[in-house]
Image 1 (tube, rainbow, N blue to C red):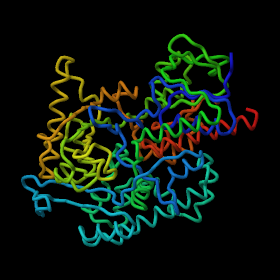
Image 2 (cartoon, helix red, strand yellow):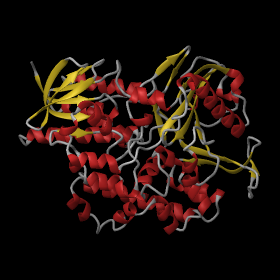
Image 3 (cartoon, helix red, strand yellow):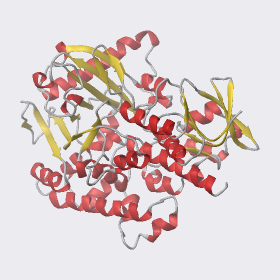
Image 4 (cartoon, one colour):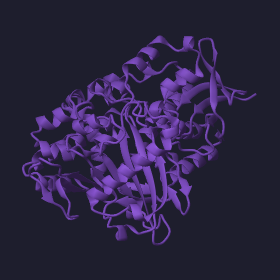
Amino acid sequence: MKTYDVIVIGAGNGGLAAAATCARAGLSTLLLERHNIPGGSASSFVRGRFEFEPSLHELAGIGTPEDPGSIEQFFNRIEAEADWHKDNSTFRLIVPAKEGDTDTFVNENGVEVTIDARMPVGFENFSRKLDEIVPGSYESAMKAFDLSTRMFKAFDAIGDMSDPKKIFSILGEVPDFMRMTSHTLNEGLDALGMPKKAQDIFSTYWCYMGSPGSRFDFLYYMAVLHSYVKSGTGIPDKRSHEMSLAIDKVIRDNGGDIWYNSEVTRIIMQDGKPAGVVINGEKKVFGKRFICNSYPYVAFRDLFNIEDVPEKQLKMLNTRENAVALTTVYLGMNKTKEELGIKDYSVFIAPCSDSDEQFSLVNDYFSGYCIINCLNEIIPDCTPEGTCQLFLTSMTHGDVMRDIRPQDYKKFKTKVAKDMIETCEKALNISITPYIEEIEIALPPTFCRYLNTPLGTPYGYFLDKWDSMIPRTIQYMKDQPFDNFLFCGATQERGDGYGCAYHTGEKAGNLTVKAFKEGK
């Protein structure tokens, strides 16, 4: 039986990137996926006349032809193709007024609010708009973007950030680099003198990292915001499944094998390290090196005997906390977005403005925090003529469904969807309910079943200040359980996000290729 150079477990974004990198380098590569399609979260599904995007809100990192972003650069490196649609905005944040609030006003939708911020692309434009909303915030915003610009130059200079010596070598050129990773976002914005209300707007994307501004570091958040503000966002024409299929093609075109409907159910150990896999409980396939696009907790629980898992890995699992989970309501509407009165692609609706207070509320099934996206704003013809599609997303933290009985599940999820829809209707002063043609509701158990992650989280572990991007990067090799077995995906150094997953998959692939070149 053939022994592969590398076996990649899981065809999510990270696994696809890893397999493409290895196959293009000439390694005999096998990619195994338990589902019948690639992509994990990067796929699509059809209900009635509508094809829905399961998870992707918007991609930062597309850039422009003259200045491609990180995702476009990755696609160029592996020679994959995708048809991008661009959106030259970032987000709209609405915080509806509640009883006792002061400093309120009535917005363009006729709703009384404390914040209604529609933020543009471009560092200068973004900072000036922020200053228009919160006078006196322009200078601090521009300082933050100056830091992030220099930070990216530091990333480029470092190259392989897994080598601590390289990180320390650039400290003279970018002396603020380590300060940015040793202070939280809140601490950094305070140090820059940004007014509190401006900080709340500036921190809107905290939910894309799954933890609030008092927990993740300044550097990590600015890396994300910088990418969004620099050149806008993008969506592939055929949903994110187009990206997955494009990388699938790269793997096959370079001689790689992909087996779908092939769940890895056991790791075969020899001489104290992985030597093969058992597929669907029966078939055995052997390999020299392995890359796993799975949650480490799930991999160690389901694929290994407990005595084979290094003790340091078990300690690592006990120190890290699972991040938030998502609830998403997918709506196929029999009205156009214009008829519904929707003018923005991405609107964040928050019950309060402070990210830490917002996070404190997500321990319930629905906190009033909701993001509403309308794909037709970027891809006008993504639905049949006279229709549009919306998806509403909220967050939860912890096992919020522990007291829901199986017989009550359908009723419960219907209530969650109703509350989310009514929140969006009230905040935007529009009517959604009468025009719903198709509805699909995905609660944490849905994502748990599909993604096979604890409580359905897509985010991996909380990126706390002590355990954020730079510490995880430096510790990357020490965090891997065996010298021939690497993890990639949302649980690794950059957390959740398509670009982050591609980065970790490509990194694991490159390290695997390097090991073969060195004869290891």
